[in-house]
Image 1 (tube, rainbow, N blue to C red):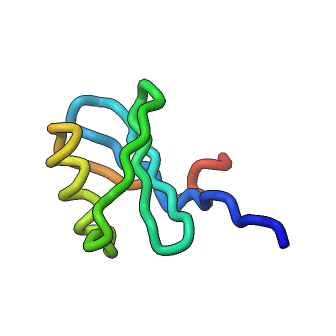
Image 2: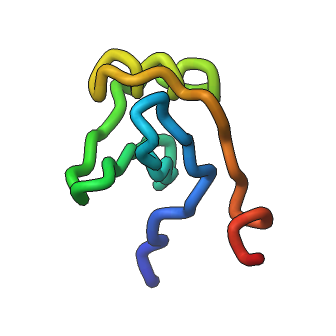
Length: 74
């Protein structure tokens, strides 16, 4: 049986003009910063609002916009 990969949930634009890529794998959420570093969110992070709070906590930037995968293809 093949293992499922990470699924892109959305890309968050920070106040610092950087994009933070948010992925889901199973029940876990991962945030990748512009430098390619990946942060595994705490299991209590289960919503978009909590993910935005996690970006503020870990990367010290407020999320000012969100783009979903369907909006990125253009």
